[in-house]
Image (cartoon, rainbow, N blue to C red; front, side, top):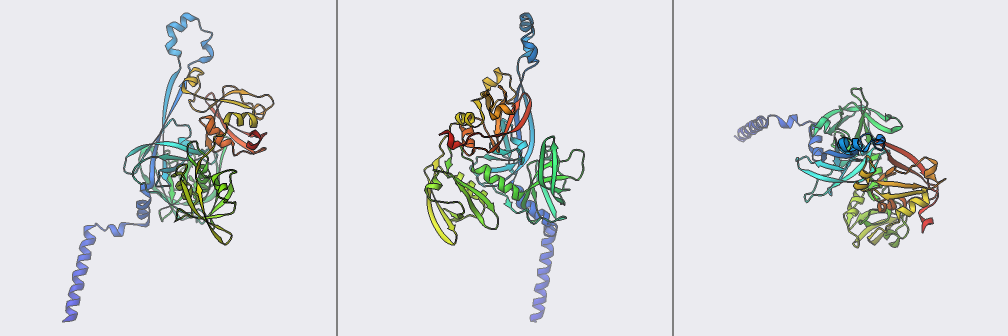
Length: 455
């Protein structure tokens, strides 16, 4: 009798399971590893649209030679005009606080950046920092709701042939998912003359215009790369920046001193095996006053364990000047607890540093000044003069050039420039990005002085 009851119960359970399987249309069987990976990572993927405004002067070289009567009659045809261009790209959320990583070429020269989240809500974003050499940038949105950050994996153990997933905004089709395999590792490409990206992941996952800056995921839904380029005319060839390189660059982009932001004064180096290692401590910084030294291992922040430098930097950025952080360190084998009171970073004189180091006389560029000079950009630092026989003079800087970026950092005012140049030592080679006419030029200058020499 007991066996009959058990058998009957088993039949009922099996029948119920069969009905459940029919009710969900076999979803449990159809939920492949790719589906699970996309479900996990998709909320962290964003679409990015940018607007760039340029002022174009029609035939400026002939304007001064035209008769006054012609200028009065046809002047409207030759006055400066605004040209608005738009572009699309993708990005991925790396912190619940709103920090997003994307390609530098997607956002670098944008006047307005709008981010569309997975729920289709839209937010304006600000550029935090960019590294054109590596084609990476960090932008930030502000929202009251917590955002889901992607889970960051590693690119150190990628296997040729393993499945990868790309999510992005190709041709404006939001949150498009494509799959493929890792085709090759450590590739080098030249997307433009004089521009070279090294150490890339090659994949055959379809990547199209608009995918730039979006994530390349592994089968676990972890970020393993940032999609950066497709080879023109090729099919089945996509490239991504390995996530270990992305993490290293993001630490530098996030740790830059910023006007009005809390300053800690640490430079970190990401070492996956070791954790968060202090690479250097800035002189007279809050970290220096708390007796933190290079080589210390950071294990916790305000009692919360931290193991990733990107996570640590975004947590610090969430604090204000005057607030105190509790850091748990390890120096050798000895655990150490320190309290660090954050301060506002001092504002070095960017104008003074630029003159002393490179022989550049710079002034802030305003939209009105840009329009009066018929410039194609409205942000940056205008070159007002170049000292003879200076580093800037030796590479051909000219009055009217517009400095838009130094190294990995965009510069829109002299305060921001000062915060970048204060890290430069005598003899350092510094990369400059300059707009001349409609061209973006890059050049390297060797500093003839260090920041400490200008005090």
